[in-house]
Image (cartoon, rainbow, N blue to C red):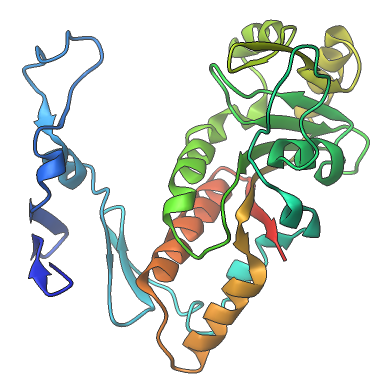
Length: 301
């Protein structure tokens, strides 16, 4: 592997997988992965970060043929990218409200009752979400920044919202955390099981951030805790309930994505970070589909 003309690593292409044999990155040489149930440095099975990345197939290999990618230990071919990206674009929902976003969560003051209107959190709560039940689940053992339940729609919906802010770009780096969080919590979309009692209790508390006790209620819509519990219990068991996961970000513009797909369709080159962005988000959409949910990105127009 080369970067700006200098060798930075070595890949070995085997019959069944691509192995990462060497990575010339001194900054990570002293980083090791250990099990949390051992004292630091005492895990006999600890491994270097490089070995961990390789063993878990966490690398992505892109090719000059943009239809090919090696992701999560498997080789994929996807002609949709070079065909205009219509399937991908169906998962992108442009909302002009996000143009005004200046921060992810905003600033906080004692007795503040709402998130700043120009924060992504404020835009979600005040403009984007129409669910009749809305809960702020940010911080702690969070499943999403916001959890919404639409009990009056047909079919009913369960929605997880993950908020991110940043300058618009086609960088994949801005999505790693949100995609990881979204995929990790897909199993929570059922909103059922033993963990719910603890969740309901945690939502009784007000929102605290940066050592500031605000007056922002976590039960933002839907009534009291008792009313919300009853409505959710009556909704999530419906056979036709639709479960969705939204990444809500100011760091992506649908127009920029459309322009990149147009360049590819015209046979012109695009930066590798867009190809990586495509595969990261397609992986997110596919992971949602595997459990019967639908993934979306709400972004700038």
